[in-house]
Amino acid sequence: GVIVPFAPSLRRATVVAAAAAAIALTLSACSTPSTDSGSGDGSGLPTVTEGKLTIATGEPNYEPWFVDDDPSNGEGFEGAVANAVAEQLGYTADDIVWVRTTFDGAIAPGPKDWDINLQQFSITDDRKKAVDFSSPYYTTTQAVVAVGGSPAASATTIDELKATKVGVASGTTSYTVAKAQLGEADLNVFNSVDDVVLALKGGQIDAMITDLPGAFYVVGAQLDDGVVTGQFADANGGDDFGIVLPKGSALTADVTKAVDALRDNGTLDELQQKWLSDAVDVPVLK
Image (cartoon, rainbow, N blue to C red; front, side, top):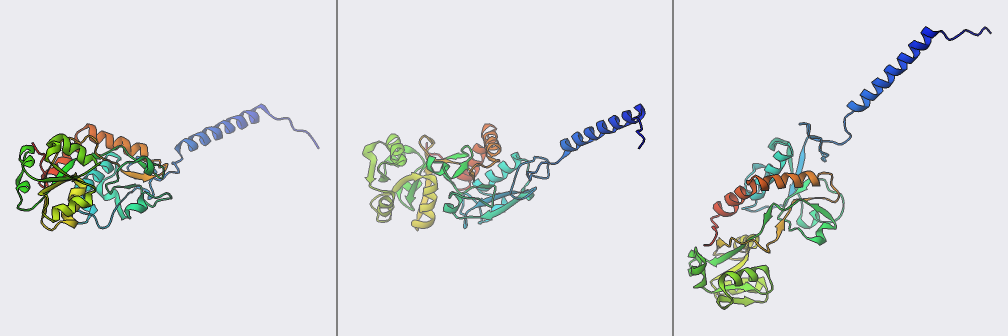
């Protein structure tokens, strides 16, 4: 057959077309959406449901951590913290999907069907082997549980508390704080927290010292006429509560950044004062 020369004009047209195709391909690659699901507000965070932040908590849940066992109302300390963290991440309350989990199941190894979980989880090295934690959003204080009508029930200062019979479990952070605040001579020391509760029920002591979450549990589930009368200002040695995330979560850094921002701007202190002091009438002992 006859060989037709490759005309210069045809060569130029081919080069231009190839260049245009390459540019189009590059632009297409740059504009391709991320395969990570994320919120509709453009945050691009990889969440289990696109455009939503799935937050888990326990069932049932109690005050002052949540109110009316309804996490979606944004009330209670952890309910308010969850909403504040979500806002930092770019989600509104309407973007939150609430689900329920057991405490043990949440910190067990394995995949999760939620993005973050709040259930008063203390941060420990052992738990970090199975799940991720954010930075702490609360450090537990030590509180006083008193029998209603006893002298300790009306104590508002440390000096007034010293004039009553106070019990504490040996070898605990509660004992360390109680000894520093009240002096060892003013304490009745028991082998365990359960023994202290029994002594309180039996009238051997007027009050006991335990961490604030434990104090709420004693009053809500173990002592019929108990009241949480006050808390100590010093949180040294208290347990740090962190938000739990699945192990290796791509959200861990962002959630930690959100918690840190809330700590730095004073929001966490304000929520702690509102829900763990004022709302439940547990003032700091003077």
